Amino acid sequence: MRVAPVMCSLIAMAGMAVSFSAQAQSPKAKAALKDASGKDVGTVQLIQTPHGVLLKMALKGVAPGEHAFHVHAVGKCEAPFTSAGGHFNPASKKHGMEAAEGAHAGDMPNLFIPANGELRIDVANHMISLIKGQPNSVFDADGSAIIIHAGPDDYKTDPTGNAGDRIACGVITE
Ligand code: ZN
Image (cartoon, rainbow, N blue to C red; front, side, top):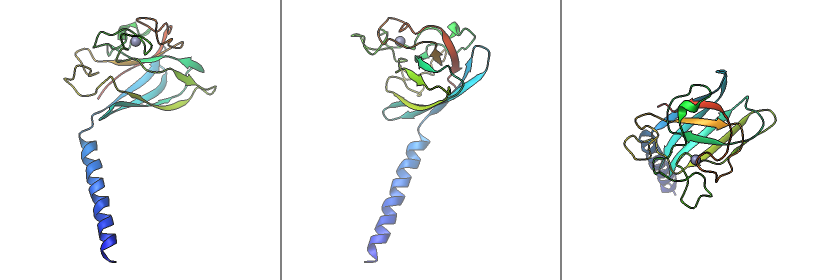
């Protein structure tokens, strides 16, 4: 009967070792989102996983309602944020998950901001990578940015999703 606790702790230690080594080789990144006046409206932590990138978002002071957000092709945020280019699209697809030709790598579901303007949400994007050198890496020659739009993405209008103005922007940094 003495054997069982020892085996349990060995199994637990093995599990810890696996999770530590996985963490060590998982690239991370972040983006600080600011509106056109330069006001801080939240942060995004990006974590590489074996199944794409997890975006952990913490937003505040965003207008309540439905907003598109995307990864954009250029890591440059100068209001009104057209500097960030179009949606990140390394595979030359059409916009939106409803497009028969597939979606841009930077396309993601709309955010629903509640009345207090604050939202915490985790979003998975299987189409981007934080690993430099990958064809879908956000760390390409001109970098990438995360943008929140004034209106919702209709998931089909190419190439913008008809999402309106760009109200917040954050360059993705290591
Ligand atoms: Zn798009």
